[in-house]
Image (cartoon, rainbow, N blue to C red; front, top):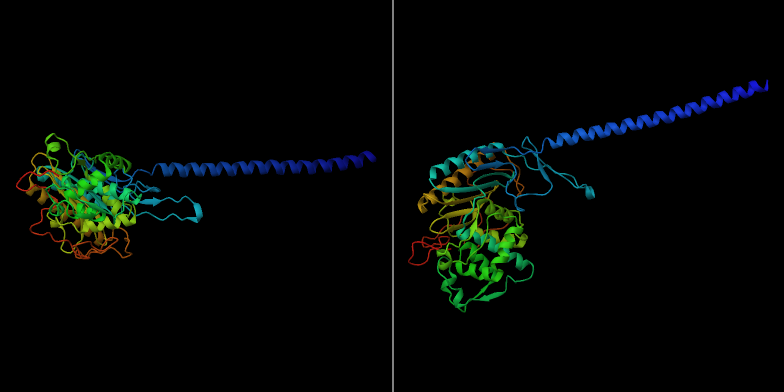
Length: 433
């Protein structure tokens, strides 16, 4: 009888123990399945994301034309950290997840604009009979197209954008005070463009005015003073730090001996567009320096190239350059759908009049394509907070009001006597910038 009671108690304890073991095993198995499922889902998501990382673009075979949704220059100015472009042309922003940050969608690529810009730019460049390099960036969507954008060309006065950035960077670091003054010396006075040559030795000029005149008037005296202040090595080091591929300073303005020896300054359409994009994004050193630079660009007195193809009243913050064998122009077309356009002309078949006509055609085509895109509802709202307006006559300043000689919402008119940007010396047909 005692054995029966023991057996019953043992059996009951054994069943309880067995139930606990079974429950434990089931829990382990179920937990393992859950982890495998999560790993499988994560793997699938990773695979899907990897397969969707190539940005949509267009490439005209053999033409040197490149189009993409994101600016395709490998410069710090043209690449925004934390953004990825999907194969369908849409983009998405990534968040680091810190402080509860939420990812905001990046602008959608304007594929129609890529197509039209590519076709129009190639047609105009081919018809010109000369070497034409173009870079265009729609600043609302970061859609971009370039033709021979990385090709190195003699820069003429376009290199002054890089000189300005380098000097302003040094000023921001405390090496110079913008309101400090410089006294011109006899050795500073050179010919070509700009008004300072008429001031003579002994004249005092603020560093801020030197920068402003170097850009707005393409003043060669101001440029040489700033080159000497920075040093050519420092300027070229800054170009590399910015990720610029073709830009370099090898001589001062109006150095005829160096020019005769084949020593030149160089740049590319993509490099110049990258510098202009820094200005637009207020990253040309910082917001203060960007505002100064924008005002100087808006006050440009040479409006004989791209400006001729833009509607009246549109503000074009630009820099031009001419060297007898090249003619260049590039800037920010302001408005509710702003964009950057840079055009470089030279090479075999070059003529001054042909280059100016070609650049006007490129300006007209670029503006018309953006206006058509805006009217079709493409693009995003811009910094002003207003919806895109396709009215060709509508214009809004970017960041600041127009600078000296340029009223808000109006293009700067060229003086009939102005030769700024054409770097010619008095009495000479070929200029040395």
